[in-house]
Length: 426
Image 1 (cartoon, helix red, strand yellow):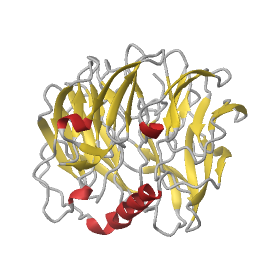
Image 2: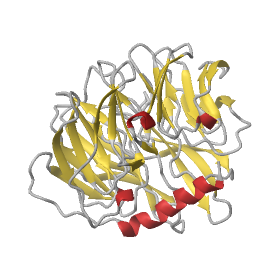
Image 3: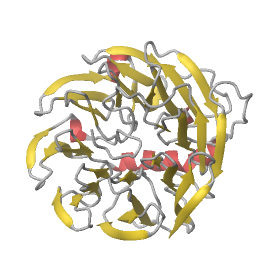
């Protein structure tokens, strides 16, 4: 990774906490906040996941990348109906920077990072497994000191047989009992900071900086095929998978790829072709018609959410407007991965503290909720009652009444990590 990329990332993170205001609640209007829970610690990049019975929300806390690594981080279970804490696990200086995943046995898997600043931004990453009651079952070291400057961690993916796939200093496949099944990309020069996804047939897909989009056999990790995607295959957003097995990847510097299940590039879409540049951190969602949705950060002329037709042409774009003059434009980023709800509605967060609901038909604004949190990098999850859960950077978890009755049941990939349990599996 070039030094300039490190510097840009660090400068942005340094100024975020002081540059964002906390918007005040407006009148209840559409999408009222049902409850909010203060974790007592910031939340960077972590997105919530739901238990299978949707009674519990799981998420974790972390500090800013340039902040002095502090104690007091926790992994938390929150009652979905009331917003009251059920239990928490003290993680001390270990930080949760990704979404958890719920396994078929109802145990919860998540990753943490212990940072050692300022020495080359070295870190130790661990994979945790905890019971539905909050008891620690195991923790496994998955990276020990490889340099990195990316804020997000790899979110675990869980196969239908309970195999756990997660990236650290290499890509790991763990058996349900925590033993290593296989590893891949062991010669990577940096800690792997993207998340694997799993196809309907069990094939594992992974892409990252200098690692092409690669299809791996779930039994032994052997390479089925590998496909380069542009310069350095620089991808910070995990892929999505369509109903026919097509893999959708949004890579730097703003190019969408559709790749067949056999590794052929079907089409590409370059944001530059419509006059935009930006950094994609938002993972795509795919609707039942095959349309693809994703956002960009550091966007020029603005950050925006894009919808592509199934053939890779632009269907519409949404550029947030009526933005406050006292907030710098670099805080209007869309890190949040969108979530599809019933009624042809898509939801996502905007960095300085907004949650949007748009029509998937034409991108028109249906509702917007400002929340009392400076930054939203989290991706939303929508339960079967239409309640949307999302994290704010200042450490607040929100339960918001959406305009939908639940997640879109017809979408092949309705949200970040595919389902409400965050399995990353189609």
